Length: 109
Image (cartoon, rainbow, N blue to C red; front, side, top):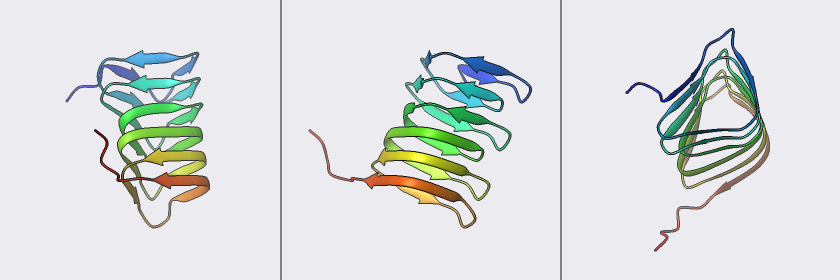
């Protein structure tokens, strides 16, 4: 699937962004990021701000909050500081996390 939003490794963005589809961040993003699908922070990517999406994959650096209604995955190269709220959490060995994690698999009606 092609991302609706793409930030290249040498790219930078400051401000809020909302995507109707997936987003791939390989550069520096400062602000709040919202997607109706998934957000991927590549190994070269950095997000300073809040991420809201059904699914979030972090291989790079995130300093802020992540709210994912379905799943968050931290790859071994991930660096994270902030708060995570999600229904499902995957953490590969080697990932560095500092902050608060809230995992709630309660079915919502």
